[in-house]
Image 1 (cartoon, rainbow, N blue to C red):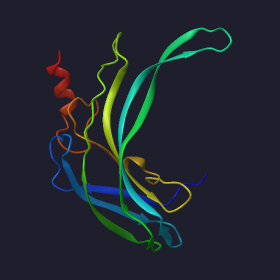
Image 2 (image 1 turned 90 degrees about the vertical axis):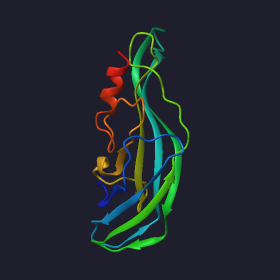
Image 3 (image 1 turned 45 degrees about the horizontal axis):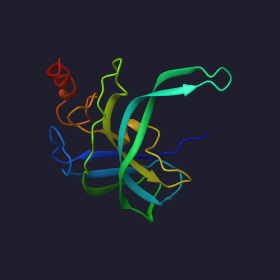
Amino acid sequence: MVGTKVHVTYEIKNPPLIVKPNDEIEGKIIITNGEKKDKKLKKLFIELYDMYTALVTSRDPQSGEETESWKDQKKELEQWNIASGEKIKSGEKKEYPFKIKLPTWKKKKGKGKEDDKYNKWRLELHFNQKTGMMASRGSEKNDGTCILPVKGSKFTPSFGDPKLAKKQKKQKK
């Protein structure tokens, strides 16, 4: 399968050190058409995901034996439509301003220890475009992915305080 050459990146205006529920995030989405022909932008949108790993129990159908393993989980919390129906010429780069208000969320508690059910919790914004059959962030998914600086996250944020995850680990010891 050949990937799209329509790429999405983003810039956050005045990035805060930490974000909380109901905070507003403002910035711009930059979309670049690297295809040889013009493309119709069917949809440009942002999704907010609650991401974590969860301890999942599975049962072997033959032996009936149960096993536990950590599996990645992804739950969409909100989606914001930014633009649709525009034509992007071959080689063109377009910018779309956005301003979104974050919803409320609940952190998944756990550090992956013996009695925990959750681990590696974080909130991610995905900046997506749809010019073909499927929505995509382009071939460089990291360019269209933003890890938010939220309290309790186990990942270094894309903006804000880069020591946020490390600081919280030290505080809880």
